Length: 145
Image (cartoon, rainbow, N blue to C red; front, side, top):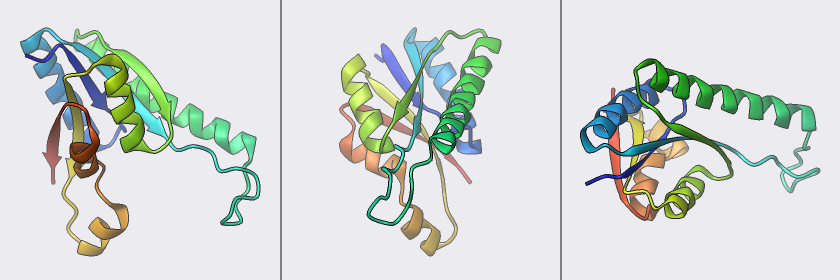
């Protein structure tokens, strides 16, 4: 039985569908739910790729990811479900997996959109597939087309 569920929420259509599914799972199993949004780490000043860290851009990104997380929490509350939220920073698969270990999660729910183009699949990679390999618990991939 699932007692602690993490929803990796990014505000996308697939993420919103995963949000709906995680609410049903939480209700069924009486689990606590954590919504997590993961923002990339800022690049260091004069990084190896020539990029420059600009604090204003980093703060704007943090506000954007916090807004995504707040939107998910609001949707849960409006539906009558309680959830806790956490904004993580770093590489998404690593951060979600580590957070799952930290709170001893039983299930991670993540949205997954099938990409039509092989080039898009190759270039973007798959967070959901990588989570299956690295997560310390079960992973539920909610598929959207």
